[in-house]
Image (cartoon, rainbow, N blue to C red):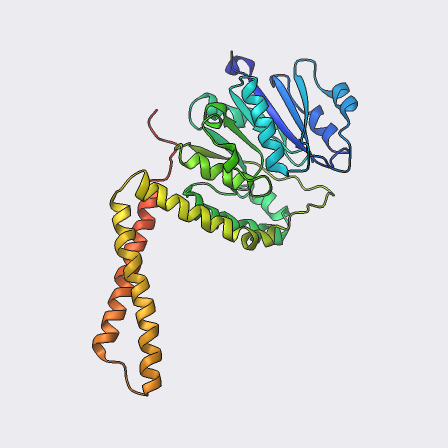
Length: 322
């Protein structure tokens, strides 16, 4: 691995919050090829056990302890770690949680696609390992499936699954181009990060890995996330469509949207209006009106489907030319 990295520097950012019993296990598993470990204390009830961590970290890795002034959430803590990693001039940053739910034996596999220029962002995917998937609680599985599909639509990364997975590696040159104020501080952090990487045309790769479920209880209820995230996802979607198809570019997808959306909405609204109107008159709706409504809905829907197909085809791909 050292030969593969050569002169490249790699940092791990660990947002810490009430995981004093788990973080030591994480530190023990960090390999020697990691140059820096940046632990960000997010002001929880359990103090960060710095002395124990220093006693367990390998001698080849330099460690930094940072602390937020107040509790900002996993995103707020990770962003502070990212800024420190940028200051250290590293090449790759890996985000690892402090609760020992991430298998650090996968670290080389997260880094390798970035070094070989196959991807700019590599993340875990718990849904390609069927054996591990069966061990995942059913409610979490359903919640993640629904949420993954909604995030695909909102971010434009149709080829990415399990997008809320917090175990990822990212190229620092991409991080430097991001406005961190646009990244969420809490559970929406990973989604907002992917959404901003979309505008850089960053290539995202999924890495199959199992999730580790211990005896800890997460404060995040995954089955509620599609509902909680719905407003943020809608804003991301509208922002992406406006920027991608009307501000940064104007293409055939833009025409599909401009023609299809008004036609479809007209057919729905005009159809409902006439259904209510002629129902109150207790007469049959004229055939011409029915045909106008039907054609508007069908044609508008087909154009919107074409827009979706165009969006899927033009999402950032791993086989993009360098």
